[in-house]
Each structure stands twice: as C-alpha cells, then as structure tokens.
Image (cartoon, helix red, strand yellow):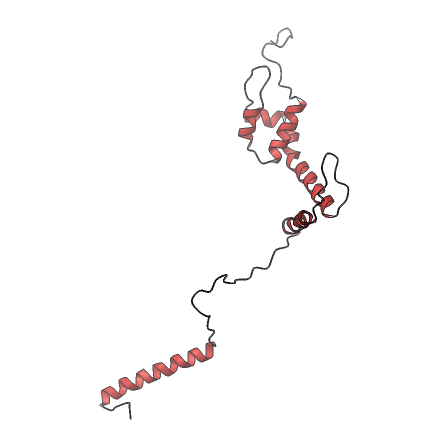
Length: 163
C-alpha cells in the first residue's frame, strides 16, 4: 500500500545508486536493454523491471553511459600514449611496446589511419608470374588469327600454305 489515504497500490520504483551505475556500465558495454532488465530487480516485488520501466527510471544512464565510457577510455589511452599521469583509479602502462600498440590502435580507430595492404604471395606457387604487355599479346593473337585464316583459305583453293 502507498500509505496515503484514498490511494492504493505500490510505491513508485526508486533506483539505487548501485543500480544506476550498473545500468550505465551495461549500456556502455552494448548489452541490450532486454538483458539489462533481467539484472535490475525491483526491491518491492522481487521481480526484474520491464523495458518501459527501465527506460523511464534510467533515462540519463542509458543516454550517457556509452559517452562516459568512451571519454574515460580515450583519456586513459591518450595519457598512456604520451606517458602523462593517468586518470585517477587507473594504472599507467610502462611497457613501451604496449604504448606503441595503443598509439597505433588510436590512430586507426579514431584518426582514420590504415595500413597499406600489399598483395603478396607468402609461398612460391609453381613458378614466376609472367607479365605480358597488352600490345604484344594482342599482336600475337592477331598473327595467329591471320595464320589460321590463311590456312583455311589455302585449303579452299587447294594451295599449300607451306612452301
């Protein structure tokens, strides 16, 4: 009961700070709302929230969860790439190789950089690849066609093409 005279029913759901934080993190990680609902339990009923209630009571967390995570991750990555003080609660990466890998990852994902792709065979596949100039190949084909045509014409007239 609501405790108010003339009004019956259960009290409005009030999320706990822990539930708010969990919804924010799960949203940031890309977990679908349907699955998040299973983890948010209404203390009054002991049952999970439905999607409509989740969106109603956790509107801000759903809207800002991903942005906050991306900002924190970006801050961490950039601080480590440049060897700056890391954000509170995080550990600096001292390994130069890992920092270089982070820099490459950042350049590819945030700056649009990409590696050049070379189409090379790693193994010998039965011999060298021969390159033929297009004009030479075309001329050889025309020469073969003319030779065949001469032989056919010679056969019609009874002449020998050899000779």
